[in-house]
Image (cartoon, rainbow, N blue to C red; front, side, top):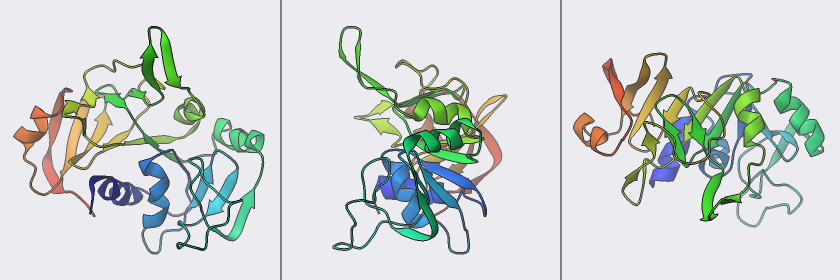
Length: 219
C-alpha cells in the first residue's frame, strides 16, 4: 500500500452516517473508494454531483460522469447532477458537514495553503478554485497530504504559501500520523507503525503535543 492510498483509507474512517461530504482534488477524491462498510454518506462534488459512489471498474467509465478532479465516478440510486451554481449554493449555504482537502502546507494554528505555488515573482498557479468556499462553508475541514515534500516539512509553524483559510482545519492526516488541531495546538493522536515520536518531530516543523494515549494508525 503506497502512502497516498494509506492516507485515503484513514481519511475514510472519519466519515459518519448521513453526512454530506465534499472530496477535494488529489488524495481526497480516492476516499470514495474506501468508505467503510455500513457507513452511508452523501458524497458531493463541487462540479455538480451529489450521492455518487466509488470509481468504476476499468472499461466501465462514463465520460459524462466525473468528480472535481476529472476522474470517473459511478452514480448510485438517489444520485443527482446539477450546475456549479447549485453546487456552490450547497457549499456556501453550510450544508456540507465535512470536506476532505489536499494541502501544500498546514500550520500549527490550523491554517491551510492548498492552491498556490510560485511560478514567477508575484505570480501564482493554478488559482484558488472552490477551496476558498469549502474551508468557510463546511462544518469540518480535514487536511490530507504526504507528510513531507522532497524531505521538507509540510506541517509548519506558519504557512509560507498564500493561505486558503485561516484556522479552519480540524484534523491533519498524513501517512505518518493523525494530528488534531486544538485550542492548545496540534495534538498527536495516532502514529503509523514503524514511526517514532522522535522521528515525527524531526520531519515536522510545527510543534505538537502528544496525547496521553497515542493510538496505532487506523487502516
